[in-house]
Image (cartoon, rainbow, N blue to C red; front, top):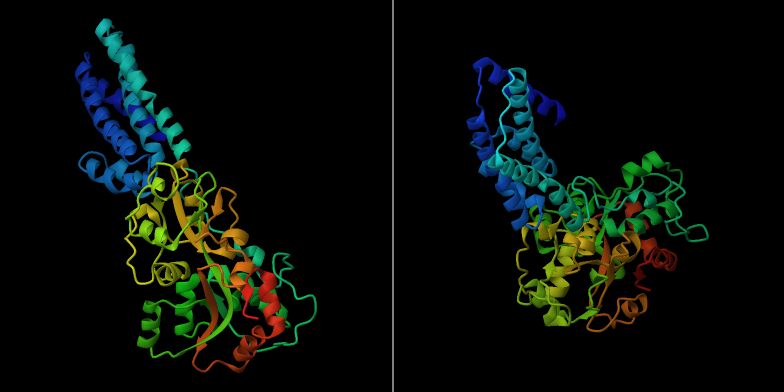
Length: 435
């Protein structure tokens, strides 16, 4: 911005010099009008949208298209944090350019009481970006452009990672060639990564990176359909995914490997510790809109959702809503990654009024955020014991999914995961096996 403002200052000096302007009061009035328009509209939209820069990206460019192409460019790159400073800098660099010329011709403007008052007001208004910057930092807990997703490097196989579960003894199955290509949900990556490390022999990290992938549920499912992977580890596919497989003439074979709890979490400062399934349904149908209706404070409920086709969104639709239609979330209430959803619930707008969902292992082990707490459902906590004994009401299965006729090694790996040794590895990962 600094070079641009210096050029702007030089421009106004040359403009006044070329036209030999001796009274620049009309110029200043024109600049004030432009300043009020740009900065005023910017401030109003910012305040109305509670300092949500995403919302500014929708509305603001349309209001300045006829006037300033540079702000459109700034909008395209999401540089909204700097727009306030740009307006202030443009205004004052213009004034400085004029004053330099007036100083050169020894005709500085005389300041009467009215002009001094107007100058003080302009200086005070110019300090508003300080407040906006402070308010933005106060309300937002994450920087745009910085990913909130979990780094999965700690779960990569054949890297001597301590995070991966270990059997403690050699696996009874060894695969030394024609390794099955694995892919799956982010939350299940530690399971099939640990299985590959236990069973695959003679593999290095470079090979593992290509053969053992984690592309999230929708992409992993598509890779299975299009024969880019051999086994996909995920929860039960959604009806849309099943239709896609049928359309591609792909018959699926699903093998149940274990169970996992579907959990809900809120900010740890939220006094609500338990919700019933009917209360959750009401929240996500936007029938219950205040936490005070379910035992909390009087504040609106921010109900975040995952993207359609993700494993957790499918579980939400099938296990929780059970045929009841989810209300379409507001634009900022829908997130692509589970990590983003957890961080939004932890402190969206620096408030404790959000709720979200995920799978127990991901929310409590993989993506640990100390600002959230997992709540009970129907008064039951999602512990491993309550998952195994069936007391926790939201328990789903996860599967190893292949095409109808899997390769020999793919079937051998799946069969091994259902044995006592494979189930032991699943339990040690943090999930609950079927045995």
